[in-house]
Image (cartoon, rainbow, N blue to C red; front, side, top):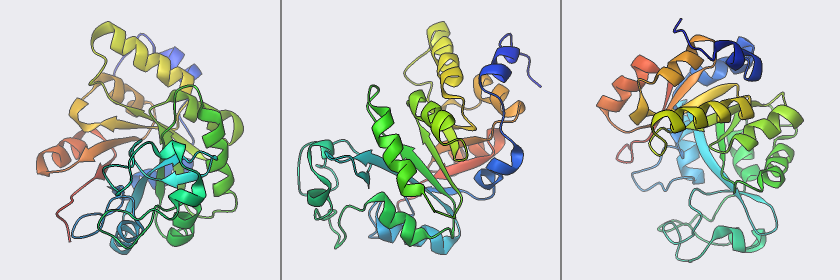
Amino acid sequence: MRSSPFARLDAFFAPAPQRRRVAFLTAQPFAHRGLHGAGRIENSRAAFSAAVAAGHGIELDVQASRDGEPFVFHDEELDRLTDESGPLARRPGSILAAIPLAGSAETLPRLDEILALVAGRVPILIEIKTRETNAGALCLAVRRALEGYRGDVAVMSFNPDVSRWFADHAARIARGLVVTEQEAHGLAGRLRRRAALWRAKPDFLAYDVRDLPSRFAATARDRGLPLLTWTVRDAATEATGLAHADEIIYERPEAG
């Protein structure tokens, strides 16, 4: 095991999970925003159905409508993936649910629709996208959507307050911290990542593949936190991911 001056503090503030709780995270790859490409748009019902057919897990993004409903959509703005413009968060759920995805007969899906579609057939990773100061409301909405869901599911976020909220209010749900080293280098970056780890109390890490190998990631993995890596898009990053992480979150838009 790699030594770290923070080893005891890491074990205290962010203990490793029971292995059986998180075993599903490393049993198959995860399709990033579903298995999209070949006419299937990201974060769509068609992309998720294709991932289920392939037997792969699903990674998806969730953010809140103006009235707090969790919708499956990545961007803050509607512009790239719809013919509408402006922030998703300014529209109520009733309006968002009627907006078509670009080049598709589908509309923006609510989280509960996708849970019903997947129905426990493959694991789901829910990335919760929330403003730094308002994590609790969306976390609560996601928890409510998951009530009664019987499939394997985990939540994760760049925001450590999301994982911490689930640690405090829904500890049965596996929770992860999404990490990149691209925007925070040197000592300040290392301290920021460790503070986020201690705040989040995650069951796993989802790490930027561009940063692997990483001493921080390897130390967490060595002491029992599963390590996923994103976003794998080619043979080179797949090799890196398989060498330094437990499973990959991949995206191959050209795939059929």
